[in-house]
Image (cartoon, rainbow over all chains, first blue to last red; front, side, top):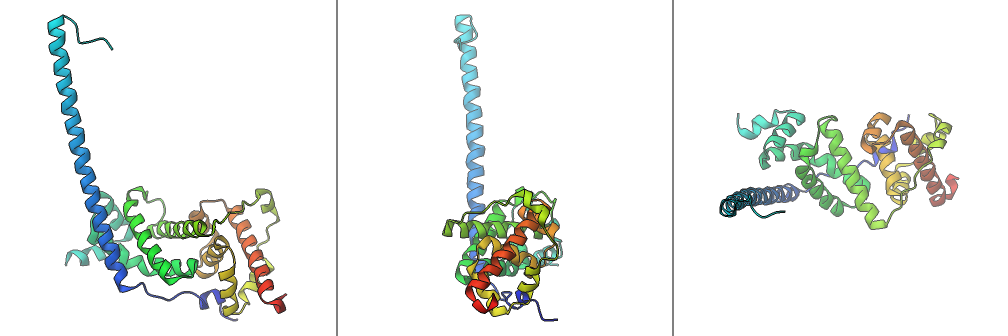
Length: 73
Length: 192
């Protein structure tokens, strides 16, 4: 039986040596960017939390002064 | 055992699970070494352009790295990577050629025959002619024929890659063979 022609034309090329280097440096860059994003998100979340806490404290103080729990919504 | 040596001993799934826990370029390099050749060759087969295949292989590995967390271990990593490669290459070719996929009617699936004479004709084709036919047909048809006759995927495996039902796979396969044969007749009159 003759050989499957699809197998005869199957590519046998090896990926270029430089490709591994290119992929790995892109991967490292992506990792770095992901870490920056995480860092920013973590700081952003914690500073937002601090702001909310401060605002909460302000409201309590205002409430004490006016006898209410802060301005109406 | 060195770190890389130890990681080389891990299965794909173990390696992916550890990467999902903590990203690590070196460990990803082990996956690259295992699959780069297969992905590159698949890209060449689909695009028929070595330079483009190199760029696509780079982008596919980057895509795999950034979406590793989405891999849910339901399929084998190799199957998932095959699907990513297939979809990425076809998306690229579609953008290039503004390709319009023809949706097949489910109702026609009942007419399917397992022993399609076009399959025998394709298998009996001269390799150089088959190569020209594959270059001329639609990338979707090319990808489907290569999946079955070059990569030896079963209908079930093709279903997993394309995420369609069995009848849809058989229908698309039959249509792809028909179109390949009609292209063959156009290119080589004596084949008619």
